[in-house]
Length: 277
Image 1 (cartoon, rainbow, N blue to C red):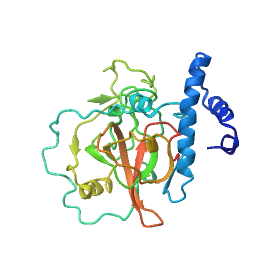
Image 2: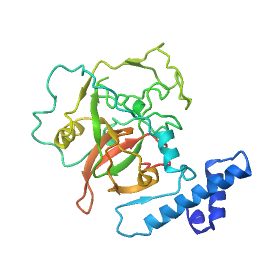
Image 3: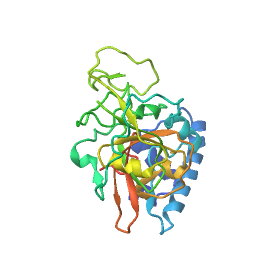
Image 4: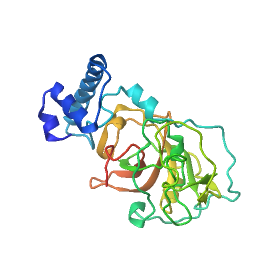
């Protein structure tokens, strides 16, 4: 939260927030309703950050005038489908890995694509786009597959389908720009093709670690909490639910200065959410 926003009165905070994010309401009634939600959220964030023992911080960002229910409905669209048959016929490719590095960050190896924002579309399922393609970082168009883009550090909570994708069809971003609305996908002018995928063994953090040590991995998380909605920085150690509703990409792991082990996760909620690094 900026200093001017932090020090202002609540109505002024709302006006500053509206100006920053270009928010316009249809009438005074809607503005009053949104202001009350904004006030509740700001008070929650300020109270949370006022507790000095937290390992992570929250901030007033673009979702501040949405209830948690509205936020979930607009941003978290992942629904686990019926079990699919993996295209891989062999055993888990990293099952014989005996050593892994103590930390890894795939951004530093050029394997993480540029930042995007899925917008108010139930695009969590789309985030299971190619996390890694034949040794190259590739950028599928967001209108076909919503890329996952922002970073956060989490101690736990990665679950669901953990898939390693190799290089269904995709087009480049310039020819198929993201529009932020639900629609029908075009199947023309494919620029690349996924030739297979492999699921990481379920309920095995060891297997996930072995996989992420070798490549980024698509995962599902429970992103429904208010803490997650307003997450800003630090190692997220909040409540870890089991209702998987959002797709992200694990792009690394490590250990913080105080010895806390974490996963480095890439999200798709724009540059204002999380740690833009």
